Amino acid sequence: MNLKDGMFSREIAEVIASLSSDDIKMEYLSHFDDNEKNIIIMSLSSDERKIELMKSLPDYYHWEIISSLSSDKIKADMLTTLPDIYGKDTHKSLIIASMSSNYPQLSELISEIGDENLRTVLEACFSDDDGRVDALIKIDSFKKINSLQAMNYRKMIIEKLSSDKGRLQALEIINEKYKSDHLTRGMMNSQIVSKLDSDDKKIELLEAGLYGYGDDHAVTSIIGSLSSDDKKMRFLGEYGNSYRFYTGGPNYWKRIEHEIRFYRDDIIASLSISDEEKLAMAGASQFITNASPSLVKGLKSDKIKMTYMEERTNIKSPLQQREEKLSSLENEEKKISEAEALIEQQKEGQDIGE
Figure (cartoon, rainbow, N blue to C red):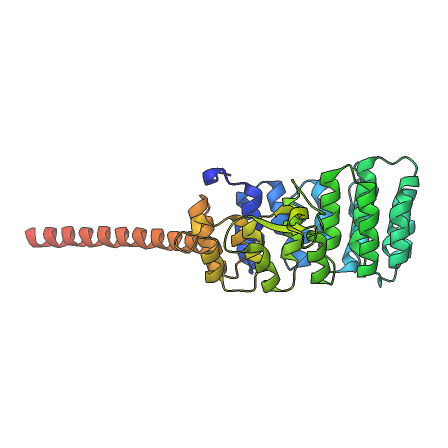
C-alpha cells in the first residue's frame, strides 16, 4: 500500500473504520494488508459480513473478529471453530469475556476452558466487583504464570468492573503492583480512570500527579472520556499539547509545578462540536491535509473523510472510482461516435463521387 508522507496504514484504516457506511468500508478493503483489514472488518455493523470476511484472514485474527460480534449466541457457536493454535484457550477466554453475563450457557462455556487460571479469571469477570477486586490480588498466587499473562488477566477483570468503588479499589492495587513499571501502570490506570462515572474524580486523579513522562496516551484517553466539553477545554486551552497545574497549597514557595502531556487532536475529535469547528481548532480549516488521522476519524462527515483519504494517500474513494469509470466510458462512447460519424462522412463522399 503506497501512502504519502509516510503515514501509517493503521491510522488510515482507523479513519475508514469510522465511516458510517459498511458498503463504502468494504470497497476500501483491497488496499490494505491483513492487520488493517482486521480493524475495518471489526468495525462493520453486520455480524454476517464480519464472519464472511473473517475467512479471508489468517487464523490469528479470528478471535478478535468473533469478540466484536453483537450476538452472544453466534460467539458461543463459533468457539468450536477456533483453530488449534498456540494460545487457543486464551483466545476462547477473551471471546467469553466479551459476552453478556445473562447468556444462559455461560457457566458451561467457562467450565470447558482447560487452563485453570483462565477459568478463575473468567469466573471473577462474571462475579460482582468485590469478587473482581479480590481476584486482582490473587492473580499473583496463580501457578505457572508470567508477568505478561498476569497483566492481561488483570486487564480482563478491570474491563468488567461496574462501580466507581470497585474501580478505585483496583486503582490502588495496580498502583502498588506496578509502582516500578511506569508505562504498564499508566496504561492500566487509564483503563480504570477513563471508565469512572465521576468527571470530577477523573480530574482529581489527573492532577494528583498520577501520570508523568511517557503517559501521553493514558492522559489523552482520560481527558477524552470526560462527559463535558467545558472540562475538556480546561485542558486544551488555546493551543499546545500540555497542561500545567500546581500542588502544595497557597504558599507560593511551597508550590510544585506539574505538567501532563496529551495528544491535542484526539481531544478535539472527542468534542461535541461541528466538523468545521474541530478543523478550525486544529488549524486545518483551509487545508484538510493539515489534519491528523486521529482528528479526521472523529469527524461526522464521510465526505470529508474520503476527501482526506484522496489527498493524503493514493487511495481514491469509491465515489471517485465510479466517477472515473463513468468518465472513461463516456470518453470511449464519444470516440466511438466520432469514428462512426467519420465513417459515415467517408461513405457519403464515396456516394457523391460515384
